[in-house]
Amino acid sequence: MPNLLRGANPLSRIFLMFIWVTPLLASIDWVSAAVSLALTLTFAPLCGVSWVRLFKSGWFLFLIAPISGVSMLLYGEPGGKEYFTWWLVQVTENSLTLAIAITLRVFAVALPMVVLARDIDPTELGDALSQILKLPSRFVIGAVAGVRMMTLFQSDWHSLAMARRARGLTDVGKLQHLATMSFGLLVIALRRGSKLATAMEARGFGRTPPGGGQRTWARESRLHARDMWIMGLGLLLAFLPVVVSVGTGSWRFFGL
Image (cartoon, rainbow, N blue to C red):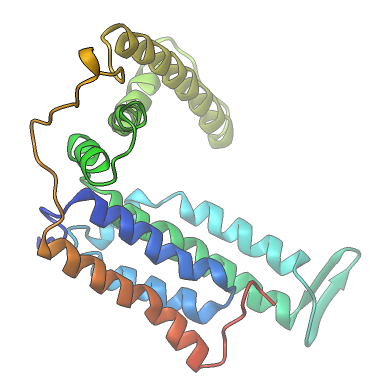
C-alpha cells in the first residue's frame, strides 16, 4: 500500500495535525466538515491507512458523534421552522442543521488524527523535538516515554480481559464490562507511569550533562524538501473546506 508520509519527519505530521483541525474549530457548519471528511477518506489510503483499518481504529467515534449530534438536535439554539417541541426539548431547522454539523465535525476532527499519528516513531519524535524545536530535555524525554506507553494499551486490554476470564470474573452487560475494564486499564497505566518516572529519574534522564555540556545525538533530525512539500500541500488542503464553505454561503464563524 502506498504511503506518502513514509520517511517524513514526525514534525511534519504534528504540523498537519494542528493545521488540519484549526480551521474546523472556527466554524460550525456541515459543509466544511463534510469536505474535510471527504478529503480525509480520499487521502487515508494514500497515507498507508485503508478504510477498513481507519474505521476499526476510530470505532469509538460512532458512539461519540451520535451523542453529540442528538444533544445538539434536542437542546441546540432554536431557529427557523419548528418540527417538535416538548418542555426543554425543541427541534427546529437550526438545531437540526447544527446536529448534522456537529456529528460530521467529530469525524472530521478525529479521523485525521488516526491517519497522521499512525507509525510515528517515538525516538524520531524525540530527536525532532529536541534538535529542531529546541524543547527542554525533560519535556522531550517525558513525551517519548508517554508515546511508547500508549502503544501498550491494546496489549494491556487483552491481558486484563484474559486475566478476568481466568479468574471467573464476568460483567453483566457491555457497558459494565467497558467501565470495569477502563478502570482496570487506568490503574495499570498509573502504576506503570509511576514506576517509569522513578526509574528514569534514578538513571539521570532529563538532567543536565556533567560540567554543563551540551547533549549529543545519535541521529540527526532535519526537515528536508519532502517535508516542506508535505506541509505545503497539507496547508492548502486544510483551508480548502473553508473556501468551499465560504463560497457556498454556509460558513458560520463560531456558530454565529
